Length: 278
View: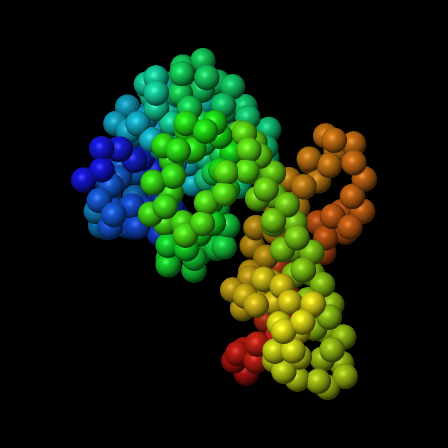
């Protein structure tokens, strides 16, 4: 059994897959979630349960945050009954939620006061990669925190890149997501235009995947939902405003992903793979 006692706040779709790999590799895992259903599912998989973030922080010395939004990440760390109320010196908070860089930097600033380390560790490749244990983890942290986290994250990540300090993990994830949605929207338009000519989209996709039109969005088209696209592009917009950088393409994509989500959900998106049921 590992000596590291791992906690997780928010064992939802991604967190649940991650904790199963942790447990399979011998780690003891304790969870907390506002959803009783999520907590029960985690316990059925072999995890223990804690009554809130503060109780979790008292029980664990390495806690992964896997909640959905910035305000949730701040609440479970800095808020009343949050992790920093109880986590001891030398512990680590790992933020694997996708949040703004300044959010994880704010957490780090408060954690330093209690000698708690912070790992900025958003993850890429989606739910199917989480199930398979082939996620990409983007580390923003000091060298010692990154080294401590690597064996833990290696249980569910086939690739880990230490891109810089706290905040840089989120920068890398945001740029990755921005490029994903640029490609996703382009595929919406290219698909509609191509289909208007009568060409077979699956045949065209086969050709594009062999050429400069290749993209992860095209390769994984059926698994791309646009569910989090607007949130991702809002982070891009906030970063651009803070840096006073004009980004007209990103601004247009921010608006267009709204329709992209609607089309994906309604079945109106281009059928690039030919797998849509008639």
